[in-house]
Each structure stands twice: as structure tokens, then as C-alpha cells.
Figure: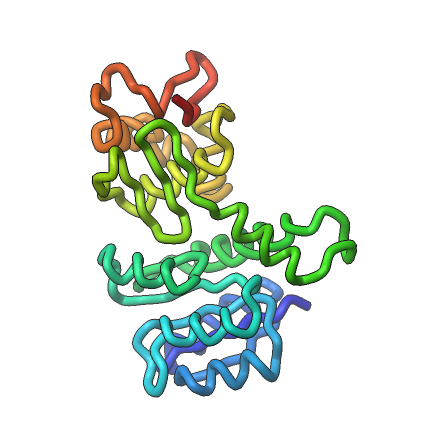
Length: 242
């Protein structure tokens, strides 16, 4: 059974998230401060870690750094009540793979955990055929910065720049752009974008992808009416490419 480390000093929230994860079929080991989280991580060797930021003894960012010293390929999801870009940037810089702000939807946690575990599994072409170090290298390769013309998307640092100037995107705008950056030139339909970013329970009627595309273009394109990067493929969808 897939094992998850859950570290949060807010015990009521920790118990609630634990129940959500166990109902989804995961085994959960719990810690209530940063130092305990590192100890539990070493002892239990979980497949994924979920860490609160504001914890005593060691904060979530420091725990991520300790985890990366020991096992660089374990997916890490940060939970935080603070959703500003500075904290998100720090989280991704120290090695977190995803960042969720409180309060959050129960289904969102399960979906994000599943996505992180699938991403980690994708690094192995044949089950058991590659050592852990090779898998870790491939995880980093999947999240490498992508540059197209003057546009650069860096998933690990949660950064987008155009001509060297930083661009501020909402979390969903960034996820759309980062997804396309992982597959430059590949066409995504509205349905594929909604299902991948929001989840299967959402529909095209509930999420307006054209609105998100328009907002992203306003931020990254010199002339949004004639997009150079985020292009429309008539009757099919959208692609990222110069």
C-alpha cells in the first residue's frame, strides 16, 4: 500500500486530512512538528510527503530540505495558509513538487496526491528496471525549465518570465502553462485541460478555458490578438510553441 507522511501541528486538520487520505486507500504516518517529520520520514520511508509550512522546531521548508538530502525522488506537497507568490517560490526553490493553500477542497488533495505519484511513476520505463537515482534524475528532467523564444517557464521555481521580466500568474494559469510547457507543440483540447488541471469531476461548462487562455495571453504575449506563444489550433484546442 502506498504510504504518505502527513506533518501538521494543527491536530484537528491533520486528523481530517488523514481520514481523507485513508478513505482514498493510502496508508498514512503522522508527525506534529518538523523534527518529528524528519524522524518519521527516515523510519517509515513514505512514498510521498505532505507538509504544513508553519510547524515548530523545523518549518515545512526546512523539512523539505532535509528530505531532499536523504531521498531526492520522493514527491513533496506543501500545505500552507499563506498563498502569496513569495512563499510559493520558496517552497518550489527548496524542492517541493506542489503547493496547496488552506482552506482546500478534500477532492483536490486526493487529486494532487494521485498526480504526484503518477508523475513519479512515469520516471520508470519498466517496473524495477531502473535504480532510484536514475528515477530521481528523470523527475528533475520532467520539471526542467522550458524556453520558447523570450518565454521561459520554470516549474520547480514556479516562475514565468518574458524577455527576462517576471510574469505574475494565478495558480491555475501557471498550471495550464506548465502543463503545455511539458509538451511543447502538442495540442490540448478544452476537455483535456479541464480534466488534467481541475479533475475529472469538472466539466467544460464549469470551467471556461478560453477565459484562462485570454488572461494568460494578456500577460505573456506582446500582441494578445496575434499570439506568438500560446496559439489556437482551430477546431482542436491550444498549443505552446513559437
